[in-house]
Amino acid sequence: MEMVAWYNQITLGGVQTAMAKSSVVLRAGHPLAPDLSPDRSMLSSSGLSSNRRRDLVFIVNPRGANGRTGKDWKKLLPYLRSRLGGDCNICESLTSGPLHAIDITREAIREGAEAVIAVGGDGTLHEVVNGFFWDGKPVSDHIKEAAHSTALGLIPLGTGSDFARTFGWKNDPHEAIERIARGNLLVRLPLLPSIMFELILNTISSNTIFCSLNVRFLWDCFIGLRSRIDVGVISGESGELHYFINVADVHLSAKAGYYASRYKRFGNLCYVIGALQGFMGHRNVDLRVKVNKGEWEIYSQVSAICIGNAKYFGGGMKITPNADPHSGNLEVVILQDFKWYDFILKLHKLYKGTHLSVKNVSSRNVHSIEVEDISGSGGVYVQSDGEHLGFLPRKFCILPAAIEMIS
Ligand SMILES: Nc1ncnc2c1ncn2[C@@H]1O[C@H](COP(=O)(O)OP(=O)(O)OP(=O)(O)O)[C@@H](O)[C@H]1O
Image 1 (cartoon, rainbow, N blue to C red):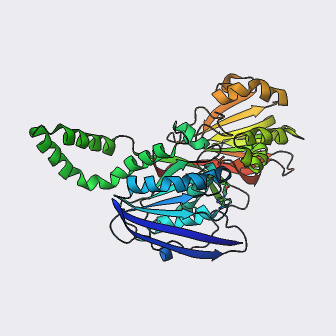
Image 2 (image 1 turned 30 degrees about the vertical axis):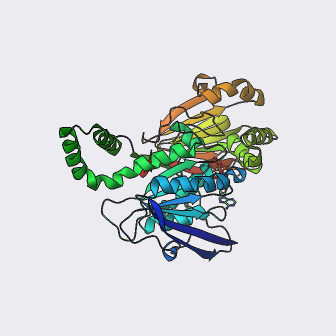
Image 3 (image 1 turned 135 degrees about the vertical axis):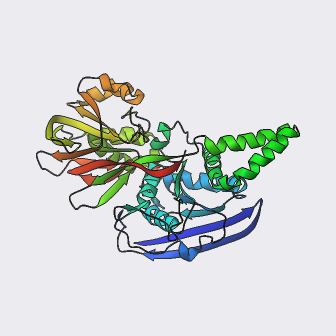
């Protein structure tokens, strides 16, 4: 498989002053798996800037939302440059195929990027999050600058864009750019003393316009611009680690998601088609579960286990309604003995997040959960952030406050 990285760095100071474009060709025999890709310098050769302006690296999946992400991105770029280019270097990198975003993210972090921003759906965000880790540890920049960590950002432009729903964000790129602009103000915190001085002068001279602008700046500096969020970790029998930010799930929903990914060209309808296909030949199974390293428990006739760091999956289903990426916990929701008609009758509750009171639905908060298929058939699907991951057995646990997110 050949993967081509296009990396554009556009330096602007109100007007475009310089533009550099380079390409790097990376050849690999097969797709690179998370935590397994070799340490290589991909972005350095394409020149993350060495000047003092910080780099914002936008990783764009041009194939997201059946190609709509690429088209929307092209339209968005001029606005993005004018809104953020004055303060930062805007760097764009289009992915060339699945898993490429992982490698680009690792390189961007190693080169000291201020933020890596996923542009696309949950699949792209998932890969970017996996790029924050390498060999079981967070990736850090080469220079190891004290107190600097690369932040994660998101411009949700996918089919489902479920992670964004937990924060109440819409698939609105302009709104996302405003968020990034505000999140980026922290970079300008060193300016704070001079702004305070100016604020006092403006107040004394009753310059209300500049005074209110500075008050807005101070507000943005301190109110909810970036926060550390938790990340879920999944490990399998081979010991390799895989990270998720939204929801990981097991059995029917994971199987439905596996099929849904083939029908993304139909937009949100893909989830309905995937669910119908998933139901064909579906059987509930008995699973063995160990919570927080306690005793093994048997859950009989399990239809699905959903492990939420955030609340939504499947194009807007509020499956783990109490999950909160700032809580330090995962919410586990287990559906048992559901028949196909139960899903139809209770679908509205699943979308509203009011299903926890339904018979055969249980919920608990955990730090870790291990799940095994008692029959050992090896055919129970596992999915993370809507991406097919393989089959049971798997261990899931939480990494509290693992990544700083522009929120
Ligand atoms: N250049 C590319 N060509 C084909 N597939 C790609 C490319 N870059 C990334 N991908 C893959 O596309 C898949 C889907 O991407 P993404 O999540 O951005 O969009 P989506 O599936 O439409 O949205 P959502 O996941 O929110 O429903 C990911 O699994 C990713 O690995």
